Image 1: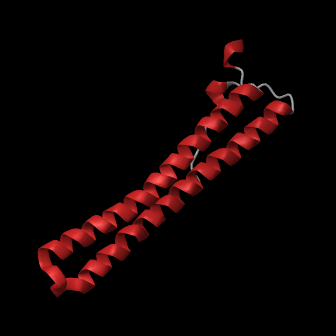
Image 2 (image 1 turned 90 degrees about the vertical axis):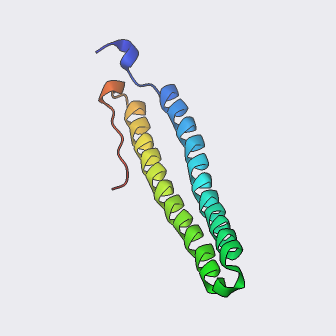
Length: 110
């Protein structure tokens, strides 16, 4: 192994900053896309069928945001798991253990 492959505290901090930024964006997009899809479906059903299918429009308005919330929770749990693994890696590095980047692997919460 090369010395350039050794993980240090600064590299863990950089990875944590990128991961947090990405996590915020992904969770926000999941929430907003669910709401936008619900509004789009609601509008399309209302335009095509009018007030005849008003219950269908409300159903569409409820289902898509619920799917967005489900996805947001999934991605939040995923990134929380990654950040916890980064905390454990940082503790190992601060404890003096030599950790090589090529040997570090992250997994989701499943």
